[in-house]
Amino acid sequence: EDQVTQSPEALRLQEGESSSLNCSYTVSGLRGLFWYRQDPGKGPEFLFTLYSAGEEKEKERLKATLTKKESFLHITAPKPEDSATYLCAVQRIQGAQKLVFGQGTRLTINP
Amino acid sequence: NAGVMQNPRHLVRRRGQEARLRCSPMKGHSHVYWYRQLPEEGLKFMVYLQKENIIDESGMPKERFSAEFPKEGPSILRIQQVVRGDSAAYFCASSLGQGGEKLFFGSGTQLSVL
Image (cartoon, rainbow over all chains, first blue to last red; front, top):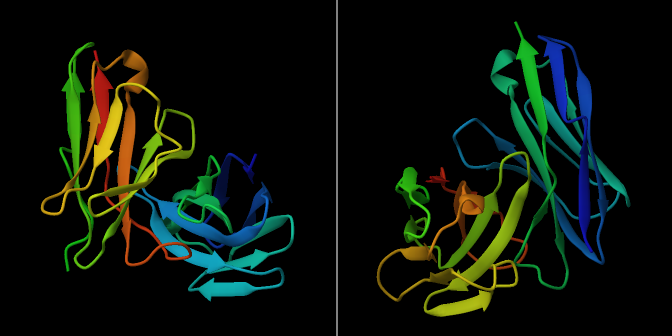
């Protein structure tokens, strides 16, 4: 069974304090790994898709990386507006229409 | 460009009543997905539909739940005879294609069963 585990569950940082969120996964035939951001009361908002080990993608203060067993979301010099829950999801080659999500990391950036 | 529209945003039902959740995908999208988010749990896939077809309903509970995406109009997730355990946030997403395409999510319907 596909599994996605995110850590930590919650993380508090000071503005400007860089850190990383972890997403460990077990999937039979990975097609893609997705990162989403979810604000309270809203639906998830797409950030990145990674397809192969060694791939990296960047967007503003965020950078996502992928290995064969895990993905990291690095946040550099975060701002209060980066506060949100960050979700990781995997998509397998067979049954590619569904995503298996982790429980998320709730990130709070204090000014 | 309107995004994925879900209504109602909040729905309160008493045990035994029916709940109908609606989802209009983004313009031009013909693939619709429903996910459920229970308190303190991650998003769980329920069903994937294309116009007039259910493609994958492997995440749907076997009883009381059904979904449709008619040729005209929004996709509907229907829950009959609701129970307290059905209380959750239900999210709809749409995509332009299938498999590998990023999903665009609506803001969800929060269902509360009294």
